[in-house]
Structure formats: C-alpha cells, structure tokens
Length: 563
Image 1 (cartoon, one colour):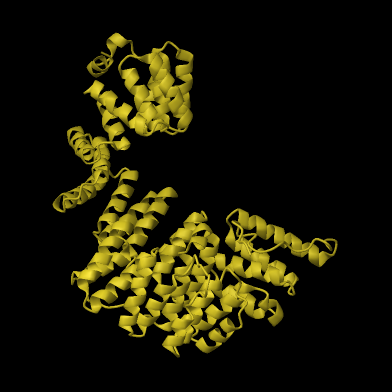
Image 2 (cartoon, rainbow, N blue to C red; image 1 turned 90 degrees about the horizontal axis):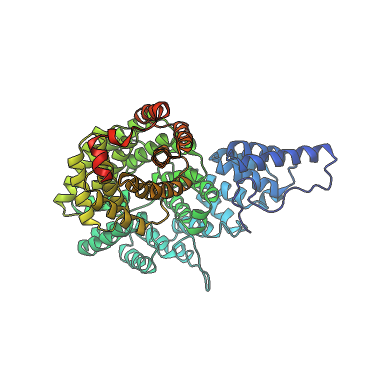
C-alpha cells in the first residue's frame, strides 16, 4: 500500500462512480471530491469533515472510513477519529488499519493495556503501521513479562525496517525495567547500527553514566553533539554528566514507552518523507502521552512541511515553561511568526527563549530574529555574547562574526564590521558569503577597490550562479567605470533575482551611465514596485526626477572608485 503525498488521497481508489445517478452516492461522491480538494489545499479540518460525511452516507465503505479516520488524525483530533472508528460496524472497522490503530491508542491512553494488546494481536494494522504495532506490542507485553516483551521486538529473518530501531526499542524496555546491563548491550548494538536520534543517544549516555562509565558516556555524547549539534536531549545529558543536574537513567512507564515507540517510527525515513503520515502518527503519540514534548516538536516539523504554520504555532504554544524543549519551541515560534509578518509576536517569542536559555543555538536564533526585525542593537549585543564565548572556548566559527558584521554595518559601525569580516575570513578563507560581503563593502565605499574586486571574483568562482554575487561583480565594474561590463553582469543578476530592489536599482544606474536612459528609468520604476526601504525609495524617486549627477559632480568616494 503506497501513501500519496496528498492528505486527500492516502489510500486506495476513490468511491465507485457506477451509481452516480443515485442521490446518496452522488452526495457521497461530492463530499469525497470536496475532501480531496481540501487535502490538496492544505485544509485538513475540511478534509476530515467531508471524508467523515462521505463515510456517514456510506457506512459499509471501509476504504472511506480509512480516509476519514486518517484525515481526522492529520487534523490532530484523535478523540474524533476514535469516535469514527468506534461507531463503525466490526467488519467495516476491521477493514481500516488506522481506525484499529486509533482504538488501540485510545485503550493505551486509558490504561486498558490488556484490551489494547488483544486488538494488536488480532493483526491487520497494515504494512504502514507494522513497526508501530511491533513497538506497541513489545511495551504492552513487557508490562507482564519483560523477556517476552523484548522478544516481540524481533524483526524476523530478512526484515529490514526503515522505521523503528529494534535494538534501541529493546534497550528502552530493558532500561525501564531496571535491567541495566542488558539495556547497555542493546544500546551499544543500536549505536553500532547508526541512525539514532538525539533522544535515543541521550538515553544511552544517561544509563552508561548512571552505571559508572562516565568516560564512555562522555565519548558517546561528544560524538552525538558533533553530529547533531545542541539538541535539547543532549544538552540535558551534558548537564547531568557535568553534575549541574541530578544524573538519572531513562525509566519509562508502559504509557510513555508506547508513545515513544510511535515517536521512533515517526522519525524514520517513510514518515520524514511524508509529513501527513508523520502528523497522523504523532497525534496518536501525543494522545497517549500528552507530556511527550519531543513528539510535539517533531509534529511541528511535519506541520511546517505541510505549510500549516498556524497549526504549528498552536502546538508550540503547548510547550510550557520548565519543559526541556521550551526555549527551542519559542525560537521556532519566533521564526514562524516572523515569516508570517507578525514581528511583535516574533520578538516576544525570541525574548522568552533568551530568558529561558543561554545556549548558543538559542542565542543565535534569537539574534537572527532581532536582525530580521531591524532590532540591530539588540542583535549586535547577543551576537557579541556568542562571539566572546566562542573566543573563550577557542571555537573558530565565521557565522556569528559574519552576522555581527552585518548588523554593525547597519548601525554605522563599519570599522568594527570590517574587523569582524577580516577575522571571519581568517577562519574560512574560501567562504563565498564572507568574500562577497567584504569585497562588495570595499568596492561600494571606494576603499580597497581592486582587492575588493578580487574577493568578489573569488566568491563568484565558488558560487557562479548566485545572483547577489553577480550583482556585486556588476557593481564593482560600475565603480571602476566599466559600464558595459556592469550592464552585462547586472542584467544576469536581475534575471536570477528579479524581486530584489537593490539589484534592479543597480541595473538602472548602469543603464544610465551606459547612455540607455529610457531603460534606466524603467528599472528604477520597477525597483520602486519591489517595496524598497524608505531610504532607497527616496533615492529612487530622486533618480527618476533628475537622473544621476554628471560624473564630474560625483562625490569623492565615487571619483576614487572609478579611477
């Protein structure tokens, strides 16, 4: 069974059109088509509603029940999905794998473990849910007998699962049962197979350290942080190893383990490539364990991939102060709010993140939000904190220096910005962004024009099709008085970046100097339509009214640049 990329068409063929003339079937088909359209337009609530109506009109249609339940899970309404499943006749419900899975999740959430296991053992959860079924069955069986539960994690001969890492599943079950030595062996086997998430690696680190192997735990942690960066679970494990917080191994309840098993499947390749499937599974995970913020953050990724930013923000708002993921949630909220044009909300979320955590990735995320909202002084202060901490720890990272240089330039502090760019270039001599920024700034300011020209050429060799770098090259030719070459480069830059007001403005200037004044006016007018800032708007209107000054009347900086 193959899952479609559209929420509106995940399973099998549509309803039969053989009897479209009959009113009930025609109404069902209309609801079906409306649901499909809602899925295509990223409206999961409408898709769930109309699939549900279509199934109510044809309650014997197991395929339609499957669509209705799945769409309702994608919308995040597990109780409604459970109601649909429970209201179906047994034979119809048995034909819907997601209806059965939803009722199993409802049983686990209600701690009706025996009934949930009975439903699991009845089978027929479909190929998509096979590994989730295995994980849930293992946790439910282990509640009565740990060894039998562990045995149920076996994939069987020739089975290669892309979803659940069986060694880590065994390790979590054994660790939660206090079988630490056996759990460590399973964790080590999982580590050897690779592909573990930070959540699973952190559980390994915490158990290894708690059982006395702090050196080994630190080695595992260092490798994971090198690979994954500052994930919250790894930061928590680091704090435990350093003695900043109590060191405890991961001990999951049956309910927590079942929710984590679904989360593990949702981190696999199939769910990662299909965010609707991930959203459905993660809704079930959170229904079983509403406190599993790791699943909530994973759900946000899926919602963002589905272009559902407001739903993502709503889920992020469920991550409360004191959660391991609170600061990360606020930074992600800030990014989504900023993308939606809600600057005040973005700034408030960034401020909450910084108040909750001084982790480097949180600080950089907040500073980026401040910078995007033209709060350059605030951004500069945070970037400075990061740069100073990097210097103290001998970290040579060009990125915060580059970002600080950008805000310092905006603040009119060019000498300091230039120093940042020079240092960034010493860390990353071939980084095209740094080469281009410093080269363009020198050329535009009439300082070190030839050296700046060479830096831009180096940047262009690294990224020959980047519009903003080609713009820099064209502007360098312009400053050198090479107007024909400037036009050639800037026309290409505008072709690559047609919505950039600065590049379009540059092309207008080059046309003017090349004697193509009608075309210059056209480009300046077009730049005005691209929503430039107030300063550039005033300059463009001046050019449209008066053109460019004669070369002999240009200021000293321009004369130097053209020499």
